[in-house]
Length: 253
Image 1 (cartoon, rainbow, N blue to C red):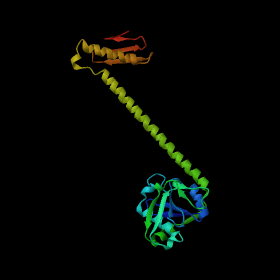
Image 2 (image 1 turned 90 degrees about the vertical axis):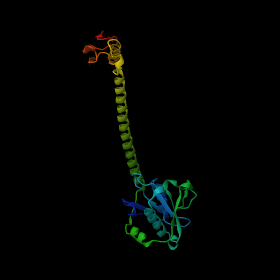
Image 3 (image 1 turned 135 degrees about the horizontal axis):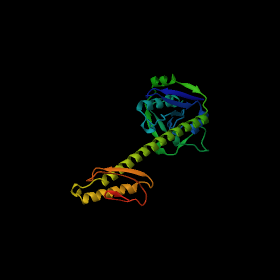
Image 4 (image 1 turned 120 degrees about the vertical axis):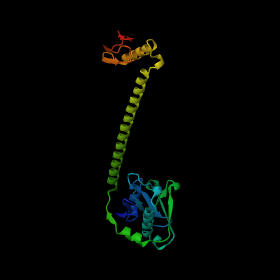
């Protein structure tokens, strides 16, 4: 059986849970979510209390709000036979994925993969108002830990797929925008004629080259209708484009 509590020290409210006994604690060590936060009285026997962080990543284990941290610490202290009678206790906490369990350890006993990921909070004394508030929210139920893990993994996979699809869509839009900007710059440069060269000779020559480039860029076998008013005599050209089609001046052949 797993005991569940609701803390209103965070908005929205958040779930705390713990095993009823050391046997249940073994299952919690094995099946706790990687992002859950484990709490225990330092150097004394106590319940293993877990804080389930929001799945949206809005809270991290090393930046738990002080009021919520106090709730967790008070619940741990209240569920320690020896610790509940003492003042000035230290509560340790760490992410669940930092818990280390080896075969030679006693039931309910754990160590840590990294001591650097273990934090401490001081509890001067028991705060009955906090403990009573949490106890009023207590519920108890049997948990299918394996099924719960499968369901969680499915949710996480769905979130990853949605994020990947959104990123792919954004990347595609960005690529299209850049391609359009590149094309615009290319055409702008083709028709950007220096006013000093816009005479009967140089200007017409540059425009002829621009028209030739555009026609040659078209796929073979397609019709293109081109019109320009930049020539001395505005003309419209219609032709079937092929690899041998060429334009010079006002003529295509």
